[in-house]
Image 1 (tube, one colour):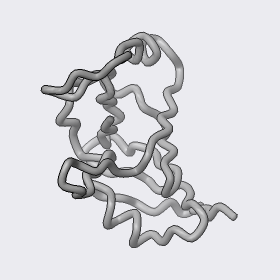
Image 2 (cartoon, one colour):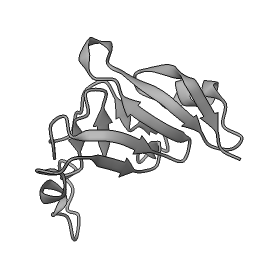
Image 3 (tube, rainbow, N blue to C red):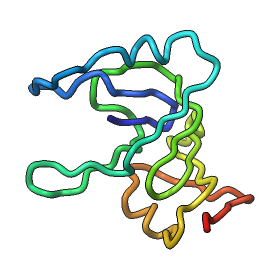
Amino acid sequence: MEVAANGDLANWMIPGKMVKGMGGAMDLVAGVKRVVVVMEHVAKDKTGSIQPKLVPHCSLPLTGKGVVGLIITDLGVFKPLRGDAAAFEVLELADAVMIEDVRATTGTEIVVSSRLAVSA
């Protein structure tokens, strides 16, 4: 799964892989007022390398274009900024997570909200 800074969502398939039970995501994002994505902040590839899921542009086939309004991950809560910035606004950090952790594991720019909250 990937979410782009413009709100695009890629959750349809992984190229070259057979995944049981995929499908249904497209109808969940079509014609709704708000899409909130809940996911892990990063994925690990076969070698154990960390792959960001918050990216400037999706590399996987799109499920929905510009549909995501909010992302909740194990590191915090984020909002796609859309527009030319290709960035996410950090609205809240999970307990014991530092902004440096988010910068190191996000595939694009982040902007810290002036109202940043930290979970307890």
